Image (cartoon, rainbow, N blue to C red; front, side, top):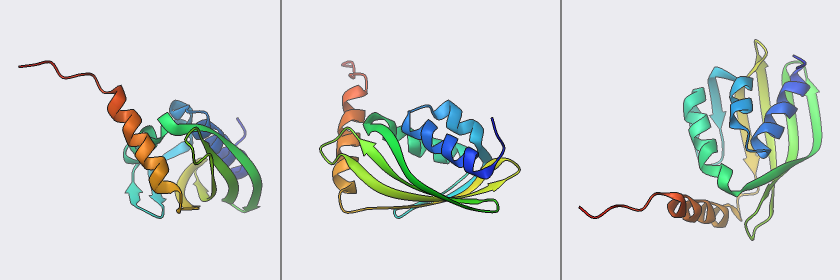
Length: 134
C-alpha cells in the first residue's frame, strides 16, 4: 500500500465503511487520538471498540472529496447506514504520523444521529446470547 497521506486516509475510510476493522487497525497509530461531536478517545483499542459498536449499521462510505496539505487529509464523505436515516454526511480530518493515522477529528450531521444509535443499540441487544435461567 502507498504511504502517501491521501492513500492512507482513503484506505481507512474504505476499511471502516466496509466493516473491515482489522484493515482499519493496521492504519491507526497505537496512540491515535479521536475527537468527535460526542466524545474523545485515546488509543487504538478504545477507538476500535467504539467502531465495533457501529459496524452493525454501516453499509458503506461514499467519498465525495479529499483535500491534502502535507501530512493532513480532509475527507468529505457520506456514511451510508442501513437504517431509515440512510446516509449521514461526515468530514474526517486525519493527521498522519510515521505512516499511520495519529489524529482524527470527526464532524458529522448530528441531527439524525440519535436514531442511528438507537438502531445500533437495538441490533446489539438482539445479537447478545440469551441468558440461561439460574
